[in-house]
Image (cartoon, rainbow, N blue to C red; front, side):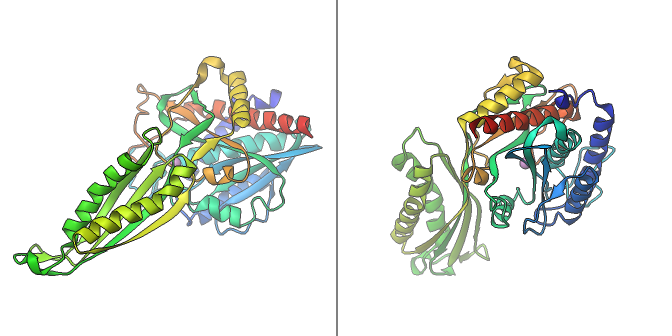
Length: 397
Ligand code: NI
């Protein structure tokens, strides 16, 4: 398809690099992407895209209809930044103190805009409708939920959703594609341990929640290894443990906050009861009480095999078969998975790693950079994937 030739379109690439640098210099935190939203809307409207009436404070959903009717498929990009002071030394570094695009969502947004521009310019070349979801608040796992509640799927037209993330662990020029498991389900855990405060030298008259809480932290690690099938990965990390006021005062209350990661939906359902039982019984053993709140955040990314094959075919055409690598799943999470609860989809990695160019830093590192060298072919992969998806669903109608 001629329209996928983004790379040779110098004018488009120049425009996209300008957009990327503009977004990068003015990052906005999750759910505060007001200016970013306005900019995206303007850029889309300039090329004749239709903004859809989704009820959301930030974020944009837009569509482009081909001249001939057909199915509707969607691509999602995340638009939010992080509370991190940028230390990249880039000429277009963040101008906002303490906020930066340290996960490359500015880059994802630019890719989606690039694909939208190409479809908008080539309406005669495709049958059906492509929708672009510019999602807010990915970092807080609230954005996908907001858009779904705001009516994203209400007209029932979207047949499939695609998305990507830059991946510094995969070399530039390669694309990481796999069906099934890619990223874990994410849930948040709050445990409050109540005991009895007192003098640090007279523990026999107290119920020490630092000791009971510590035993709970340790107990939760073995709770997984003794209760869950070893072939089903689960991680419980208590990242925050708050208790006490003085070095010689036994704390009457401890608050533990953690993250729970898993893949299998059935295992995920078992976890609240298991954690509740283990934390409760351990606390009881120390004469304390534990209250457990297990707050579900997002399910695991589970790529549909048919949609994954479309991404693979599209990538093969743009970059050749050798560009495709099969990634190992990660316990990291992504709220793209929420869309997959409604429609089949595929989320894939775009390799950006390049030692010579210094693209080695991990996401959320203050010195994290993405890789504009692979931006043109990534736009081509997205355009080609959506084109193939339109053809796929046309055939089925
Ligand atoms: Ni990210």
